[in-house]
Image 1 (spheres, rainbow, N blue to C red):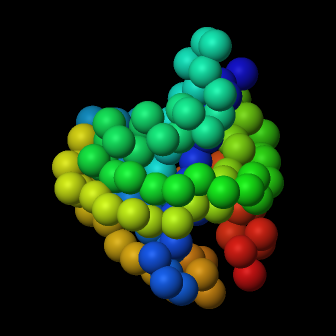
Image 2: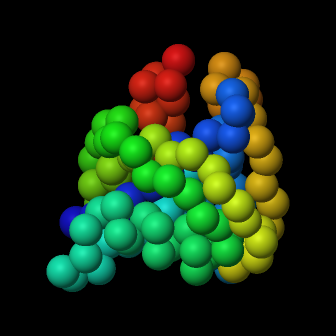
Length: 124
């Protein structure tokens, strides 16, 4: 089982989502960004590292919002979501081809990765 940390990143009332680019697993799906937790790494540290690597983004990581265990065809993930506040970003997109800031009630209009969908209910 993969341990994955993701950020529910707020800027004002809006939340950041990114679309997985072609060539990546789940290409075309929108997601709350984050990534795998490495061995001997905390979930919060992993989230900070992944956001910096994938987006050139700095955030303040706050409380844990919830978790979701989801089985995809090839792997299962234990997804842990943290509320974050946006500080800054270069928006160097390495894993994504597009991003948007979205009001929480509009998240259901996006084709989100299956593991991320249950997290929407935590935000509404």
